[in-house]
Structure formats: structure tokens, C-alpha cells
Image (tube, rainbow, N blue to C red):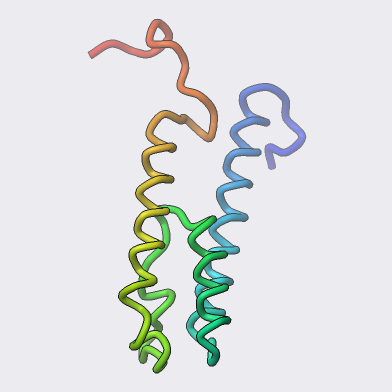
Length: 111
């Protein structure tokens, strides 16, 4: 709806679209991890996921209802990579507003 707008609304749309695409890819790589049958593939999917995952991601998306034998074996070591990425992304997002730099404090309402 806002993709053809200009200025602030266009940048907000671009930020939201970028975040949604990353979330969709996160879910895709989590599904690949969940169904991986080869440890090398599981590692590869984990690396891909850990490069794009953000705070909306839930660990249950990787484990599923019944964790696969590979996830039971390697899951705890892989979770740290994913958590570290989520923490890093959260720290980066703390200084953003709709994917853009936060305006100068002069323009923000006071307490």
C-alpha cells in the first residue's frame, strides 16, 4: 500500500519489507534445519539462519513438535549461534525507528 509513497512513508515501507523478507527466509531456513538428514546440511542451514534471524524468531520453529535425531544431537550447540544473532540484531534495532535512524532528540516529545 505504501510502496509508491515518498519520503518517510516510503522508507518505513522499505524497512518493514526488508524485515519481513528476512523473517520469511528465517522460517525457510528453520524448516530446512528441522528436516535435515545430513549434519553438513544442518550446519549449513544453521549458518544461513544465524545470518538473518531476528527477535520474532522462536526456537520451536527449528525443533518442531518432535526434534529430529540431528537436532537432538546438535541442537544445543546451534542454539547459541541463533541467540547471539538475535541479541546482535536487537542491539542494532534499539537505535532505529521504522528501520531508519531515530530523529534527533529535539524532535521527540519530552517526558
